Length: 120
Image 1 (cartoon, one colour):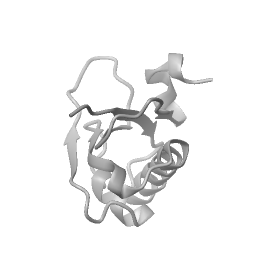
Image 2: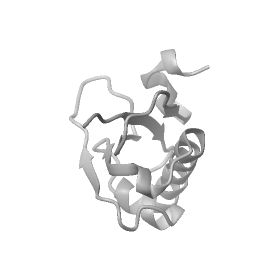
Image 3: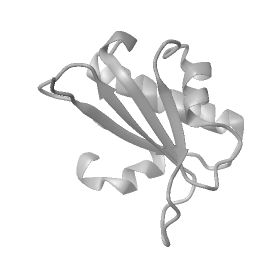
């Protein structure tokens, strides 16, 4: 079986539940829309967030802010701490059940700095 994954990242200005909810919702809604996704297309979703984000787990923010993913396996982990890394970053890796010819990544806010080659 062949898989395809879709990546994305965003950031928040302040470590609050509301900011994390809003940032994750915007990123995931764009990712779903650009890729024509439904929950049934997804095998699992992996979120990571930098160590300075402690107010809310990004996976929980996804479920609570979008109403999606209620039956999907979700996991959130803390990014490795690296000198010079961008602060308050949330990343996502969406693993699809089936191969797709084209997928569209989503990098928003300061997350765009992580992959300027993908940002127009």
